[in-house]
Length: 350
Image (cartoon, rainbow, N blue to C red; front, top):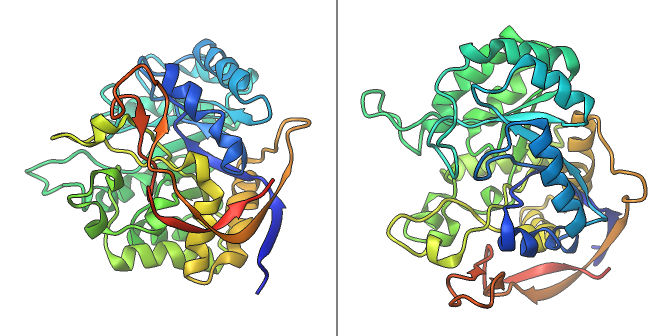
């Protein structure tokens, strides 16, 4: 078995780059983690709802990481119009992200019904923009909906949107269930799906009582994790990497109402190589992390930003903390990464 792998730098089709001093720590880590292209989520405070906001945010990101290609998205809301969709496409905005109201971080302005957005979706279909779906329903006592079945109950909406807009490219984000994998496989070539690094590792036992493994959607059961692993082993072209790396200050994770999010950006590809290697899928790394997503989106790195990375099989320790503001107390000014203090078996050497 080879102990060295050289491949194109990866593409992360779902990243949270954050704002302010946290952004200033996170964004330079993107390239360090082995990624050269990323698709940026719009759920800031306030959310990115216009082309002007998206371009201003992109300029901030490019200043912090000039060798990374940033693809930008808008936040689906009532203010978004078909005219703004056409304007966004003209200025290179790639897609629109839909958040059901209240299901995850900064989703208070999320949607409650898709039907009112059909004119927006029609415009997106016409101009060739991507619809990105956070695929969960809000918890509902009367409907017996909670974090463990919210994704599966959402899938009927994915199928309906695909039926109503068959030429619209739709990405089901951060799938966590066998039901989601099966649904995406059953639909047409315009339906894609991201899988995170942490959902390839975690099950429900790993986040129950362990705040730094808590994310939305939550990790589910053994058979669900196996379905995610199996679809990568299968090499299915419509499943690709989207880390959903979502950093929070440690004190906001280590509290009575823990924020949802796992931070993987600084070691994204070493994490992924280590986990894929653990279930015999290392040969799938290139296709899953470097090729499938670019092919589905029809994108590539900006001129001069393509690069290759080399990994070697060598043990390295995940840091316990990443500091972003040394003027604050440690737990207020630092982020705890995924698998903090644990060993990875692959590392980047260039």
